[in-house]
Amino acid sequence: MVINMHENLNVWERADKIFNDNREKIINLYENGKMTVIQLENKFEISHTTLDRKLRKNGIEIIDRRYRNQILIWRNKKNEIIKDYQNGLSLEQLKKKYSISIFLLRKNFRKNGIKLRGRSFGKMINLKPNDDFFYIIGVLHGDGSAFCYDSYPTKRYRICRINLDCKDLDFAKAFQNSCKKIGLNARLNTKKKETNKQGFCWRVDCYSKILYDFYQKFDLNSMLNEKMEYQIAFIRGMFDSDGCNCKKNNIVKITTIRKDFALFLKKLLETMNFKSTIYGGKQNSGYCKEKYDVVILGGKSENERFLKTIRPNIARKKYGGKICQKKKT
Image (tube, rainbow, N blue to C red; front, top):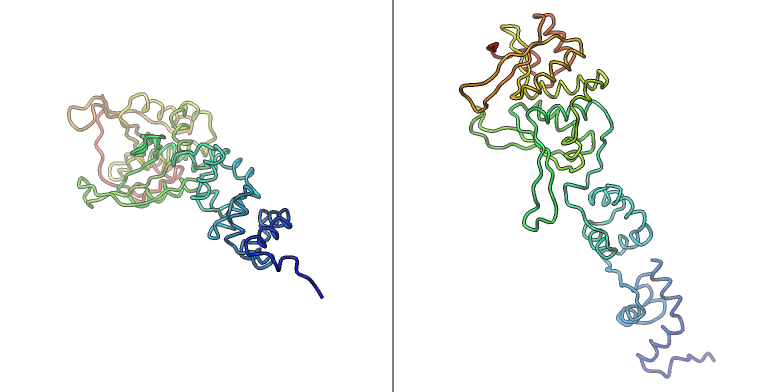
């Protein structure tokens, strides 16, 4: 006859006795993720409420069943996840890589004293020299913009935004694709703009403090020593933004409101074997006080060679648009 040593004890005493006799085994099974509270209840014949109370009393964190797998991943790869975050991966990228919700990532980072970054910090982008990177830099020196502002309402961090508003869909898509290729989450939308004939413009925007800081420190003169393909990508960005192809009177030009930038463009075009001259100066009317046109010299043949070399993304600039007027000062 087998005698059950727990048969004469009441329910609470029996549960305490079983838990105390199997304490290490139960804790190890639960902490290592091998068994849930319900599975332990069935194995050791202790109610899940008692197990919950006993585990908490022994300093064991009870895992919410909804996040069980995610919490186990965090426990097993905690150091790796923290290292990836500190090296620049965003919460969205960590979520995809480790299959852990952003809610749990934030909660665990705070518990471990890891300072959370704002949305402008977390993009892991490729700043190595390539066509897409220099095209973006060219656009930012033209119609594009890069600016920062305080987060609202907390103002705990700075949000850095990369933005382009334009009327050509092919230009907007080209800029969006280049942003995506270097790792940015660029979005394409429309914005109401009454000054445009179509009543709206195309807007591409994304967020990156890394790119913003790099753009602010970017030395234009370094472009003079870059590879030809990178110089072409930069000029393509400028031409898509502020270029003009006036086929009827054979004028191809890039317009700017800064004289020093016009002189730089002229010098850059010379390194690319294109002769150019600068027209313009102070303006009596319009929204800008100064305006300068960097015009390609050499007539129709040189204009065609220039367009064939830089390969504009905007169809109307590839094949020619309205008649341009030039005035030399």
